[in-house]
Image 1 (cartoon, rainbow, N blue to C red):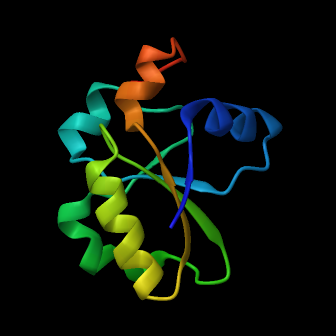
Image 2: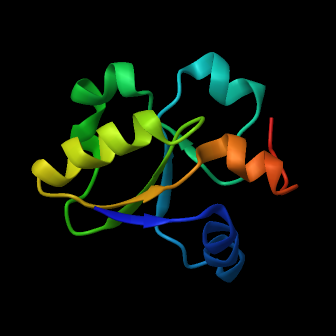
Length: 102
């Protein structure tokens, strides 16, 4: 499984050409703060929302610490999606002092 760290994610987002960033945390976690530009797609409802994703696109997957995003990334890859896990998740993003949207 492909992975990137939060510094690489930050550089990708700065280009304006990064793949869609899927935040798989629950809605209350997303509302409390997320990586700017992330799309909320909770792991708990993924089986009902996966149909909105395009298999020809690449997706970055993030959660709080990297555990749920690994699980989701592996599941999406088995479904035929191109995915990259964000190692360390939103926690690592915040530890790096990077901006958080509410």
